[in-house]
Amino acid sequence: MEIESRLLPCGLHVIGEPPSAIEAVATLVNIAALDRPEDGITSLPGILAATVGRDIEDVYRGSDKGILADVELLRQITEASRGAITAFVEKTTNSKGQVVNVANNLSKILGFGLSEPWVQYLSATKFVRADREKMRVLFGFLGECLRLVVQDNELGSLKLALEGSYVEPGPGGDPIRNPKVLPTGKNIHALDPQAIPTTAALKSAKIVVDRLLERQKADNGGKYPETVALVLWGTDNIKTYGESLAQVLWMIGVRPVADTFGRVNRVEPVSLEELGRPRIDVVVNCSGVFRDLFINQMNLLDRAVKMVAELDEPAEMNYVRKHAQEQAEELGVSLREAATRVFSNASGSYSSNVNLAVENASWTDEKQLQDMYLSRKSFAFDSDAPGAGMKEKRKAFELALATADATFQNLDSSEISLTDVSHYFDSDPTKLVQGLRKDGRAPSSYIADTTTANAQVRTLSETVRLDARTKLLNPKWYEGMMKSGYEGVREIEKRLTNTVGWSATSGQVDNWVYEEANSTFIEDEAMRKRLMDTNPNSFRKLVQTFLEASGRGYWETTEENLDRLRELYSEVEDKIEGIDR
Image (cartoon, rainbow, N blue to C red; front, side, top):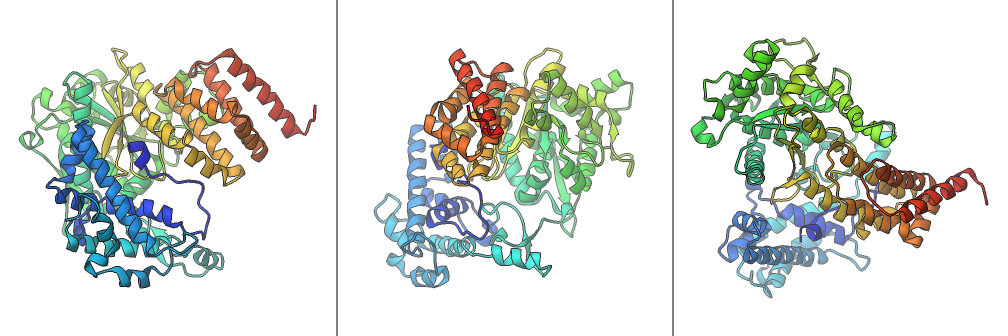
């Protein structure tokens, strides 16, 4: 059910080509799934759940636990949401499947009781008594979103930009979370970096952190993780207004405090009674972009961690203090210096370069990748030395990582997932932490998925499986990519390369992912020919990546498969060189 309802981009974006009605419905279903209290809007699943006397959050939780009645109710709510929105969009759709004259059509259908298309649709379901007024407010909002989704604003703005003329500015970000970013084709700006995390971001962060800690306890014999190693991304914090930043603050048990201008420049500790659990230690790996954009927030984080390390609390309830005391003794430094937890690249440097090594197949073994990560990511931020820049503290970085029981990353947009880009595995320290831990135990690896209203915390292996099912091995996805021609083939190849990257840094990719990818793109003769004819260079890299996955021990397959791949590699080489045997 999760795979079926997942929103995914089918093919590359074509500038100036608005989405079809079917694509618009998928976007609106996801927009409608979120409560927007600031606009007085209740989510459609929330309205439908209330009709049968349930709270949608309880339904989500019950469904996640596998309570069959809740699983079935959630299926009915999802189906009814899709049906009601489809009935609404159809009223604005022409015979070619394009959305037209939204404003005129909307004024005709809004406010006429039983003739409203969503009311007509729901009258044949168990949700017939859904609150009409709340629905009217929601669909009025969705109508405005629909008008903006299909607005053709891109080519005109591109032309203005190329002429050096004024392009209207607007916020950037994820259109599901914040439909104010629509229509596309604007000169996008981000946010005031001092205004994050917002109250809404803190609320979402608490849910994710609580679910993460619950999941780790369940997987680890009822024990809380003492340390979580995690990543802070620059653009993701822009899109979510500081959600992952707020997650770090909530893990260590502090609350951001905004001044009268809404700027967050200080924090206060949350009492252990209110927290109801120990303060979790963190090792924060900031991306180069986060370091450039949010230096104030790095300062805030470093001060917060050091403040928590200095609290007079028992070690079993304050893991930050416990580890800082141990590390201060080992390194022979002060408690404050030992509590260094905010790391990034050296100034002007970006990424760990693990992604480049994997993409170019220019690495000998995993140890080499781990050394690259440590040498490039071990520059510490120090709030006690303002203006001093990032200083390398590799030993402190290694000691902090060695205490990590779990690694953690966030996914917050339907557009970009684990294997879409190489940055995610480039920042993954799972195998590195295992090598640094005294007991040699692999840490648990988790991914938070906040792309839908029902935020999920899955293990890394579960997320990689879900990603493979919904993208790489999904005919809707790869056929959509193939329509984009040679670039679509490159996208398919890139996704397989990124999958090998996850095998290298975490070892969390199942053998069947490679086996089924081989069946889909290599064993199928028609598909193989299409790939080779459309983009022989990317097809050669695809074949090379399969052989590399096998050679590095990430894919166990038959010798027959490997012989076929070697023959294909030779064949595509000849094609590229123009040799006709």
